[in-house]
Image (tube, rainbow, N blue to C red; front, side):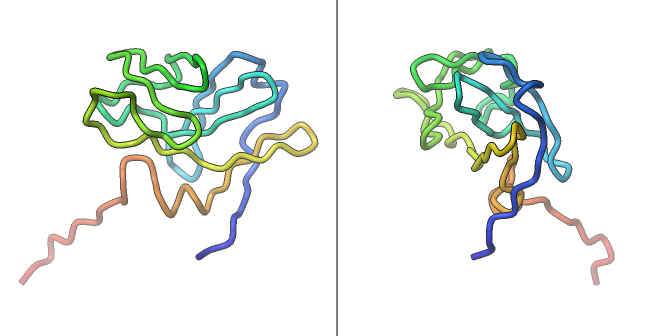
Length: 124
């Protein structure tokens, strides 16, 4: 398993309490969300209908999708009961000296939207 490689993506000043911020990390669209002293990093679109999760809200440790109101645990990514949807992809966050950093290796290992596909049209 590859070692974590934390990459600074924002400062705490750029992410006031209760706000969301869309970011790109190595070409992957992610969202940062801050609640008090905790910062979460997760995939930028809903696994269900691809809604922009930076437009969602957090209640009781769960991210509420702005489109269909399913909620995802911010601990393990699991969706609320009654939905047959993939879990939300969450990524490790580290805060140091006022900077918010995400584990880029974890994003590469389990990218939002799945692994990128390369099509080979040369064929036989």
